[in-house]
Image (cartoon, rainbow, N blue to C red; front, side, top):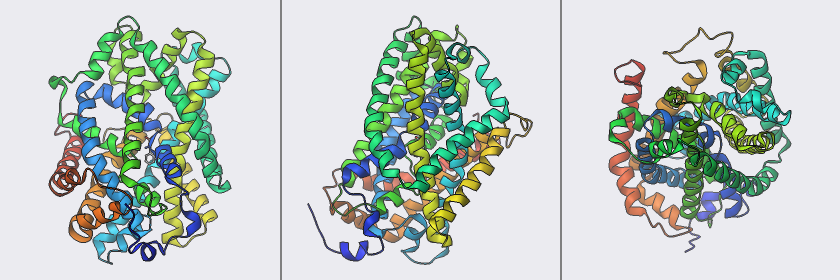
Length: 465
Ligand code: PHE
């Protein structure tokens, strides 16, 4: 169903050239942003750490309710106002809290981008070593820890990744990248399926499959919910202004509901596949040492090389795999840079080039702190966490619940759910409108507050992390 009412007026602030040409372009861009290290690196280690099947169950429930509602809201608000988050909030008035709400959305990607590039750098390193034929070394115990504590090489890899991402932004070839991702992403899925099948069929791996897929209530804690919620935001690129920005580039006839569903399915599918590649392999390859499940951020880098080594042809498989992960990570990093640059252009009045260099400066500065946190500065801990973990926790567990709450309040108090529904219905039916209403009205605000309080409580040690 099309409805052109109001659309001319609402679109007026967006340059036509900035629009996505069709919904495929839009889906590719959003999926490119969503699928990245969050799915392949972050999801498996959180699932391993926070209760396996229990984590998966909580994650799926949250994704289908909150994730869905927030994704629809942010995209609709972006398209309705034609603005990125700061402008979108302010187009509903100039009250102070609207300013704060917009800015908190805008600041999150600026804080995530630096440490995201550090992990991107780890991927660069592994790709490089596989290409050189060093697969056996990569699969030995302790390799990863030695690498990240050598700040100089970690810094070089980090800088390479960051500069690759920025070159794409500055050269303006983002759309080219999206087109290539049409080919690379399906290849990634195929290789992930092959590796997952290999992993789950290893002797001893079955315990891992059960641990990952079957919820066990003994493994439930409030931190399971906190971690799953943060991961859901992170993985779907929610609560950080990205979908406002992308929504603002969207034409009025592009189907928001359908694209939301496709991105949810694809993003979750890749995360589950990554879980199946990595978690059963921990059971099969770690010589019975279940402490590896708690390995945290290093899990993927410790476990996968062992799997590839035992699969045969590790040099080829490792190179292809890490190349594809690098690609997925780059498309996500690009979306982080893109929204940050858009904020500087819109709100600070800087040129695009100046904004890009400002952002590069911020990334290099804050990212270096994360790199050093594993090396020369390893005595520095913030609230008991390494610097990288701290940035991750600050953005995902503290800031994102707040920014999502601002979006809910914006909808409940100012915009109205019916206006969001109207916007969605410009381009399609709103099949899950009932669910949407219930989530936004009753669950989301209370739940987000509980999550926020639990995160604080975990920092002070009142509940166990
Ligand atoms: N969603 C991306 C991932 O899963 C990460 C990301 C976070 C991208 C925030 C953009 C914004 O890797």
